[in-house]
Length: 341
Length: 116
View 1 (cartoon, rainbow over the protein chains, first blue to last red):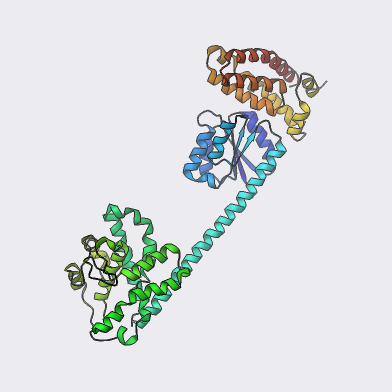
View 2 (cartoon, chains in turn blue, cyan; view 1 turned 45 degrees about the horizontal axis):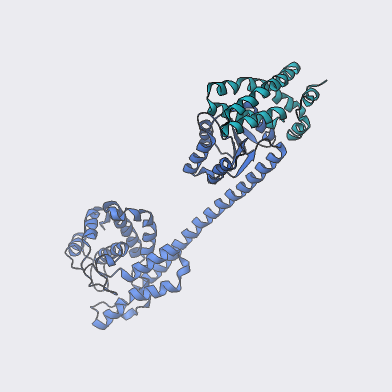
């Protein structure tokens, strides 16, 4: 299929000349002013715009400004065709992203070459960008499945079926979204929610280093055993620091923080660092409460599953350690969504 | 005599113009035909006279571009001079150049009309 060039000029002779230059190889559309041009750019696939500067209704500079606002300037090469030869007036379009300024009088065959070369270059670049985007998408899907596989394998040792990891992911998503919605200071984290959710999956990765006799002990842990159990937080960080390449940098940082701090408590009585209050990141606080809720409502070798109501009571009464009042508000607000049947 | 030879005698750089238009004289002559109406409807002098120098500059600028591409050299020089004069604030020079250019333009337009 032929590519389309848009010629924008209020002067008929100028439009005719450019049409003459390109109609043998391209589909040529015309607009008499900037406003008409933008309508065409918004509704059709355009490979290049040949734009006059001085026009009634909307001039060329404003067209460039609008194409900057919409982001189209990145994908569509815009050539300024002008009789202007004053340096300062020619710099402005360049600064607004015009790819080239062609001054009149020109030779048609040169204009054909300049425009044709850039269209080819942009086509190539746009194609490459599409390929890269597809691969990034595939890579991140593979990453996610690798991370989930890793977490599920570890959980199997804990006599879980992989469901815990899935539930933590769901709970983190619900609670983190509510945190961002309910508290303005966390609005800006909205764009990070997906990364935090993915990172939450790895919170217990350190459990791989805990011996079976402790991890699967049906009864209460001794003080020494509990100390070893607590080390799953720092061991998790050690493991992550050995495999930083399987996840992207942001997710790595979130995972590291969550691994280390999902057992910290608001009053400073958690572990391993005894962080207090807002020293604990909000995402680690979210995963902490999600983890506690899920542990309470799940059967474990050392206990039966508590009911939803019982678990909620225990959490809100700080029986499982003290949580941030904001986190408890969020937790209560989400109670119907997180309820485990 | 043909249109292009006559124009050439008036100082129009027809050789350059044909090179600009990839030696397509038919297309060049068609554009010259369109230039008649374009020039006649694009006023410069009356805007200079009424003191609307912004509009005068705009229109002179348009005609400068068109005449440049058509290699209508004497007119291109005239309109280029008018634009520069207005931009530098020398309005009487702009008027003078315009007065010198208009009769040349008239001759060229008459010639083109003769062959239409």
